[in-house]
Length: 148
Image (cartoon, rainbow, N blue to C red; front, top):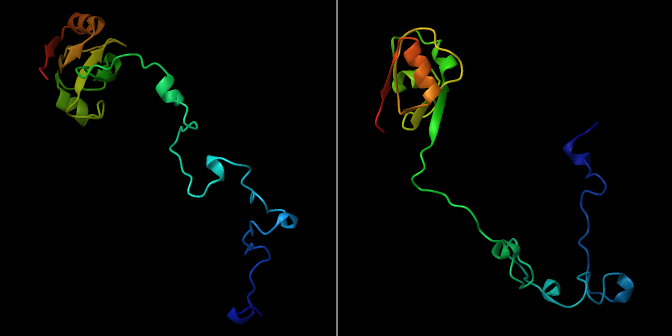
């Protein structure tokens, strides 16, 4: 019968600490498994990620290229094919968010011309592609630009 009085720790659960620097016959003597001289053989060594032994790290040697504009506008895109499911006559950014076509209320919305629109609707958004604007007007609808 198993009880707390006769439970045993499984074999190999407690591994003994490796004894270092106890003479050459121990197998871990002389350099104590640290190789030979230098930074890595010393105690307390710790270097930052990407440290290359004092040589200029590759991240600093590599040329930095490109440009990121802080005035870049990022749009949430909605295709015309998605607007067909909406039965309202006026489609606004608030309505698009309510229907789940855009995720963020505060971000800009752009309508793209993928698909066709069947009914005449008034679409309000921050931007329209040329093709989307043509298709909405051809269906008898109107486009309204919303200022951000």
